[in-house]
Image 1 (tube, rainbow, N blue to C red):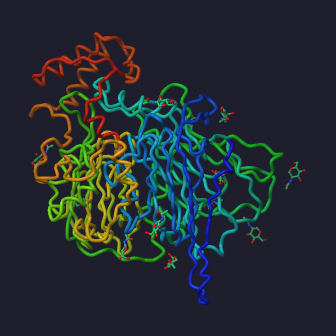
Image 2 (cartoon, protein in one colour):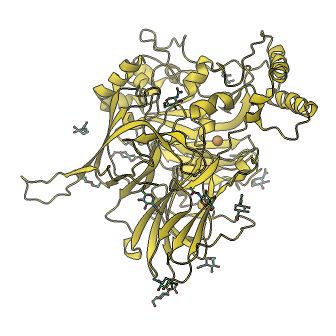
Image 3 (cartoon, rainbow, N blue to C red):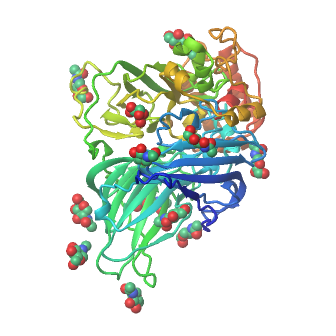
Length: 623
Ligand SMILES: *[C@@H]1O[C@H](CO)[C@@H](O)[C@H](O)[C@H]1NC(C)=O
Ligand SMILES: *[C@@H]1O[C@H](CO)[C@@H](O)[C@H](O)[C@H]1NC(C)=O
Ligand SMILES: *[C@@H]1O[C@H](CO)[C@@H](O)[C@H](O)[C@H]1NC(C)=O
Ligand SMILES: *[C@@H]1O[C@H](CO)[C@@H](O)[C@H](O)[C@H]1NC(C)=O
Ligand SMILES: *[C@@H]1O[C@H](CO)[C@@H](O)[C@H](O)[C@H]1NC(C)=O
Ligand SMILES: *[C@@H]1O[C@H](CO)[C@@H](O)[C@H](O)[C@H]1NC(C)=O
Ligand SMILES: *[C@@H]1O[C@H](CO)[C@@H](O)[C@H](O)[C@H]1NC(C)=O
Ligand SMILES: *[C@@H]1O[C@H](CO)[C@@H](O)[C@H](O)[C@H]1NC(C)=O
Ligand SMILES: *[C@@H]1O[C@H](CO)[C@@H](O)[C@H](O)[C@H]1NC(C)=O
Ligand SMILES: *[C@@H]1O[C@H](CO)[C@@H](O)[C@H](O)[C@H]1NC(C)=O
Ligand SMILES: *[C@@H]1O[C@H](CO)[C@@H](O)[C@H](O)[C@H]1NC(C)=O
Ligand SMILES: *[C@@H]1O[C@H](CO)[C@@H](O)[C@H](O)[C@H]1NC(C)=O
Ligand SMILES: [Cu+2]
């Protein structure tokens, strides 16, 4: 894989020429990104159209030093899709308008338009940037972002730094997948299974190492869906950072890195160079409803001590005994936050709506993007900005008061794992149940006995049919999403919106003109409530809403799944591979849809798979 050399940032150090005092001279790092289509073939199996930057893919790593001003000038050259960039894990403290999610803190940048991200980085460590629009980043628009720390506490224990990304990889574009996935023909919501796993956007990666040295690996899972088990044969890892939070050193043989998570760890090489060692990353197949024939869910690389020697095949691992991140201790020893002022309790539910398509819900609400970006609603609704109503029911808003202690409880009523991510903050992860523990019981003292020094990060895995409890302080006025970082589940609506200190924001924030220009160029309103009503902001008529649910009493997913199994059995299919259904013939689809229509008391509306099945709200939800 060619790695582009054409992206060296223009680093202009602001020399304090006029002053004889040598204050910290912080730099400005400028990146000019033309985002456009290129082709790539990272798994060597299929060349596909991919989103590149300045004509290249893999994408450049964004690098800066703590204290720097980072400016990313984006020009959208995609021609046929809007785009945005989110800088995952950066708090954007004081610059929530730079956070990136489309229809949340900005409008999607329309083709042909430009947009400037401008923010100061005060957090050291390992991050990444990615599109936060239309489920788009798995098409290639994702890469690491590294903030160097002159005061890195483990600097004296390491020799060299190595950035390593892990990813899943799909051969089709998201705009092809999403309508097939959120489709009546896929009632169980089986997520598309990736075609390959990648290490640094390639396979068979070689990592040249020297004996007797300690390398700091900064690993980022930039994938769309799959968590990855990672191990280095013959070497242990000493974890020192998770998601930008330094930790006390913790030794691990094998770690699990969910989509969007980051780990930094030190690996000390051996003193002799006669053998090379495999590095293996294995996609978590428990997330996949089916394992297609021929799928290799592993990707291998090597620590190469001597490139004239063999690169050995990795030994098989029977069971993954992965390190438990809940046991980590932050290096700064920040204590458990006090009892919460506000508790946000969210139940994860995967279910169908009346249109027969599969969605994801917090409680009874599946997220739908609103007509006006939520932040712009904050800025244009005056005192009503404290009233969640103005943001529209389907942005699933929670208004947080400035500096409140907030606790988020997430109960998993689904049987899959979900890596939950909060924008704008790290949270303390104060409880995580095992699989199948059921819902959190705040009256049970065993469950509410929290660590005195909880681990913190920005993306944390919720186990199947279990719960997590998170705490943070609302000390960062802004509009921040809380969502599962499996991109399919984002597309299905597994998102809530934290509107933090809106009245504070009105006092302090200025939205740059080029942000509004992007809205205007795309014909997107940028004042008023979620529905674009500027006169009566409590009147939400016309706001984007989810499709109607099935009538009460039905358990649609069960019925649909049953109907489907029966049909499948009739057709003599051994297994249901949903994306194969496109070829199953219209007759089958029709019976299933009639059944749903009957339940709905609606007229049958039969649309071929992959055809024009997107309702307006499906379109709206694809951010
Ligand atoms: C990596 O090596 C394996 C085994 O030789 C091969 O099947 C695969 O295509 C290689 N991948 C790339 C991207 O070259
Ligand atoms: C430079 O960055 C450091 C670290 O974030 C910060 O403490 C300091 O205030 C910054 N100095 C200036 C002049 O902005
Ligand atoms: C957008 O353009 C790219 C590059 O030509 C193409 O591969 C893709 O199919 C188009 N996508 C849509 C949704 O039109
Ligand atoms: C970036 O933001 C800083 C601080 O608000 C401002 O001084 C500077 O002019 C901005 N730069 C650009 C290119 O927008
Ligand atoms: C991964 O790619 C980046 C450039 O994109 C490079 O800096 C880094 O060294 C690579 N990592 C390894 C382990 O080769
Ligand atoms: C790795 O750690 C495990 C458990 O702590 C230990 O048994 C093993 O010997 C270590 N391996 C190496 C190569 O240091
Ligand atoms: C390598 O050699 C150094 C210096 O002799 C020694 O301190 C260290 O323990 C050795 N490391 C290993 C992995 O054997
Ligand atoms: C690498 O292996 C070759 C052949 O086995 C040997 O000649 C050479 O000295 C080795 N180099 C190192 C650095 O160990
Ligand atoms: C991937 O690696 C795991 C762990 O060693 C192994 O059990 C599995 O068989 C491998 N899968 C493939 C397709 O090689
Ligand atoms: C969700 O439940 C609440 C409380 O029962 C209700 O007010 C609201 O209308 C429901 N929303 C949806 C979308 O069903
Ligand atoms: C309290 O929680 C613990 C741990 O989940 C559980 O084992 C226990 O049964 C619960 N006690 C009650 C009274 O529910
Ligand atoms: C944001 O900045 C304010 C003021 O400097 C500070 O009190 C607060 O802790 C910061 N919050 C975060 C999440 O960085
Ligand atoms: Cu999820």
